Length: 112
Image (cartoon, rainbow, N blue to C red; front, side):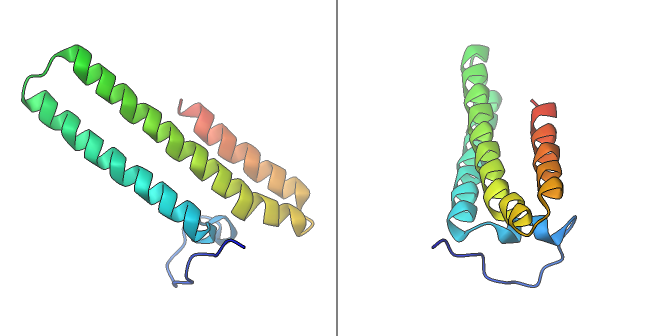
């Protein structure tokens, strides 16, 4: 069984039942690792820019960062579905659960 994040009393913005605190430890670690790699990649791109690297190389690297961010979005959506939407639906609030998923999907797609 997947473990939940340690219950740290943090201020949760938005709905507590739809918080990143509900993500499993594995999902949280995966997303954090992906974001750390993206940070490193962006720092390398900034160095390339400062060094006057060619635009083609910068575009390729920027595209790789965008692709990596898409991976973060997919992981977040999957985690949101598993740890926020499904439990809401199982509690008998299927209309609310579907609305939450629709809102999350709309937020992600609107930004693409």
